[in-house]
Length: 122
Length: 191
Image 1: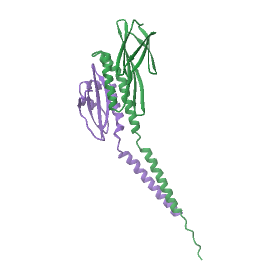
Image 2: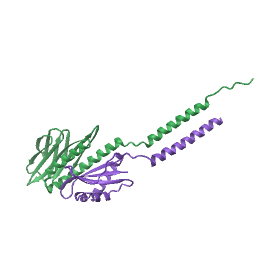
Image 3: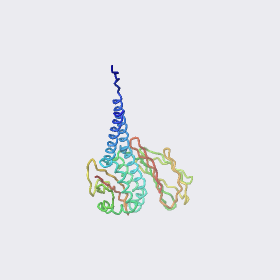
Image 4: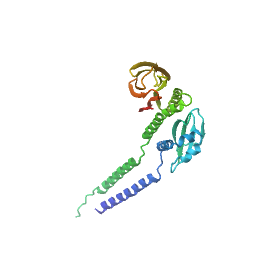
C-alpha cells in the first residue's frame, strides 16, 4: 500500500503544480483577442457622445482631443475621423493585434455625417 | 517451498487513473479559460452598429431640417448607413416615414430601402392612401386638413404601425432590418 499512496501523493502534487501554472499563466500571459476590445471601444465613444463631448470635437476635426478623452487602461489607442467620401484625418495603426471600433454621427449643428474610428492595441 | 506471489497490476491501474484525472482536469481548465468571444463578438458589434444607426436617424433629420431639408438628409443618411453595413458584411433594409405640416395639410414622405418595391398603405384619421414605391425610391402624398392630433397607421409587408401624431410637429418613423449570415436584428424608432 505504500507504493499506492506515494503515487497518489505524486499525482496530487502534479495536479496542484499544473493547476497553478495554467491558472496563473492564463491570467498573466493570455493573449487578448482584438475582437474582444471592439465592444469596449464602442462603449467609450458612445459614453463620450452621451456626455456631449464627442460631436463638437469630431465636427471640429479634433481627433487628438477625442483620443485624450478616451480611457482604455492597458491599451494604446488612436482616433481617426472619416467622412463618407473616403477622406479621413487623424492617426491610425494597422496590425493583426489592432481592434477598431466605429461610431457614426450625423453631425453637430449642421448635417455633416462622420465616422469616428477608435484604434486600440497593446 | 516458498509460496508464489501473484504479480498484480495495481500500480499500473493507479497510473492510468491518475492520467485520466489529469486529462479531465486539463479539459476542465481549458474550457473554463477559453475565450468564447468570436461569435459573441460578431453579434455584439452588429448590435452596437444597429443601435448606433437607429438612434442616429432622428439626429440626421433634425440636422437636415436646418440645412438640406429633412427628406434629403434622410435619403443621404440612408445611403451612408446601407453602405456602411455592406462594409461590415451585413445587409441593412430600412423604410422611413416622414410627416410634416404644409399649411393646414399633412405631407407624408416615405423612403423605401427594403430591397424590393413595396405598397405602403397609409391611414390618416380614416383617410386612406396607398403608395407604390420602388426600391431605393421615395414617394409623397398630402392628406388634406387632418386633425391636429391624428391617428396614423402605416402598413407594409407584414408590418402595421399605429401612431398618434401631432400635425404641426415633424414626425419620423424608421423601420430597420439588419442581417449578417444567420444573425438578424430588427427594430424601429419614432421621433
